[in-house]
Length: 620
Image (tube, rainbow, N blue to C red; front, side, top):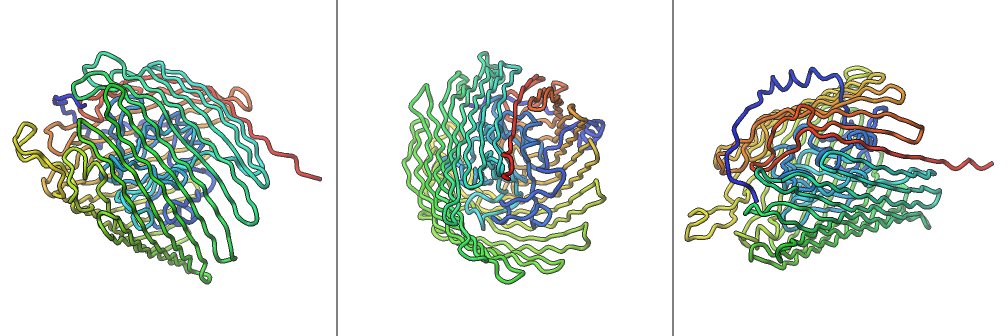
């Protein structure tokens, strides 16, 4: 699908990028869920804790930031997080990849309300089909988490929480938007949180004429996405039960390998039944039954790729004394993958079973986390992963931590049975060491610094001994090894109407077999966000600067570095009505995220929102 050719290299030096971004005094920070308090997260340890107390690198993107960003998919939100590189094969709805801390695009676990949505065919989820209108918040944990989440969590975990009603609140919301490329959205939602029950539904539609996905294409690559988020829950006899469902369905136009315009239908979704109870004062238990699907069907051929997965996840949290929180859990997954691509097909059933244990100890200034997981894969056998982390509170304002963790990724069905498939592949494995410190510089300033080293062995790559036209076919093999070393630095300023957030990463994601920088991962990137809000008016911007990177592990094409800036504005025209506008790529920067594919030039979007929350009057 990728056009051949070499892009003219135009390196962006990081000092130039820093100077460019430093001249901005406007943007909108997308890096914390709540300006007034440290956000509570659950993804890092599967238990609720403040982000400041977590012995890991975490980021939270809250509903307020999601709305102000006016992002049309999750990838637009994540690209302004330092250390998260985005690859995209064109415009709206086109294939999108996320690289966390220099790891591969299939080295991150993605959850929606606790249910894994990674497909079993290609590993990486459909980021482009995740509508922000459905989302309450996003939690990002950088670094290995296989001990808690199993295969694929080598680079990190991204968990998406769909919208819910606040307690004792009825919330009605709606919105419409229009913009460049005839890009339109429409959303409506109703949520109710009663004293004993809750329910809600969100419905949205996204359409865009788009633009030719490939350089040289003559017809627009359109996109349509219909999404639904619905839930109902309540408490009976001490058990809280909730049934929830999220899905996205639609159509994407794109170009095939011969540069012919084609299209595909997609369907992504998850359904979950979650039961929570506290049988004893020191024991909390959660049982989640989940089902996830990821379907792609080509319209001009019989090719398709389908994943259907049923999961059972049982978690038990035990408070042992005053200082220990013990977590015990069991996980079971039954996955069916089926695909046909260019005449090669497979129909595979895979079972995975796991037991995990984690203990969190805290006393005084010290905290310790120890975790272990045993995973049995019916093809690869048993795999063990572990984590050990230690934290120390030096002062009321400064906390440091150190951690060491192992992780793995089991080859997916395409690795084993697709084009170049090799059923004898071994799992990829990693060992990660990390040091970090977070400090409250003043009442209005926060900062963090983190360094990490992640060594990944048995990386799977396609090896073709005779080239595309040679007599011997190529095959996927465990031939590569990678070493990723990096440092992350962040600064946040909150005072009155001003919000400023700066994050940067310097890393060396190196393939030790070829001594090349890993493809589509930048060595340096910097993000800047700030906003100014005064009464009914707000003004802001997001900015990203990144250095150059290779387009693939073997190509001689190097994608140029770039600086891209988006302006944002909002005006509350009535208590329940908000008008927002966004200028994407303000300076019409020409940049490439995948060789041969276009990116968005300067574009304009306007959005009108309605939201009203009502609270029942207290009883006499």
